[in-house]
Length: 316
Image (cartoon, rainbow, N blue to C red):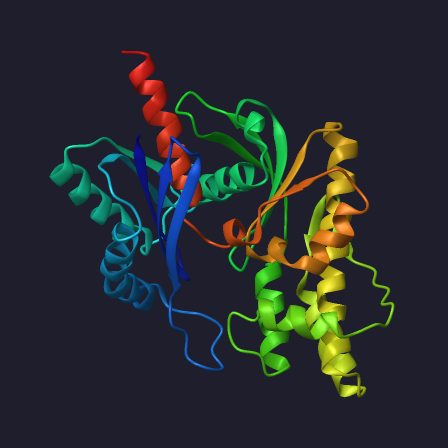
């Protein structure tokens, strides 16, 4: 039995996970970084501080949930798998992983936060065959709204090229801005979804696309206008999510026309929304990460560590 530790310290979540290679199960322990009411996020210096405060407690919680020895460690060391990608908050997880690797005398493998998202999506959607194929992936969150061409690389992670993206606001930012407008707490995704589920009106929108890229800043203005016109909070919430859903769907259609009928996988916190998942799934053949693997997590990183370690040992 082998256990693989994953660590991810993204801008809004401290996360640890263990992948059990014997039963193909993942245990996760994660915690959102605290954000003051009415604020839209954290400065990087504050994120680093909170990760430092939270990571030890999460390790203690995780270690109580399994018994065994750690075989290898995987950690998210940067936002994207490209040169120059950097965010200070990831240094907390990386430095902790280095100390644990030295203390336990086990291999350490570094991946990007984005690779972890994609890995978690493939694992939880039961699409592991795509680890060895070319496919389209959407990473849609508060910090990222990108369509990606993904293919396997020699390090058992992914080669990732951005083939479309937002030209202004990220989808998660739009959701949080509209959510705060409606009195929701940051991050606003879950509360906005609950409001939208209570709206039965059919809402039509016309998303703004430039080639395969999108523009999302307009949805905030549309929602503000609707609220001033006396529309209910439920209506405004559904308007916001419908706009984002239609935008992602139209981007997908254009990309499939351009690159062919490739498999499509959706990852990131925004894509855990049940309304968005239900409506897009009804229109195209696609895969979504399960809700608990959609938001920032170290589960995908722990699974990547297993893949890398297994490959390295098989070539010795």
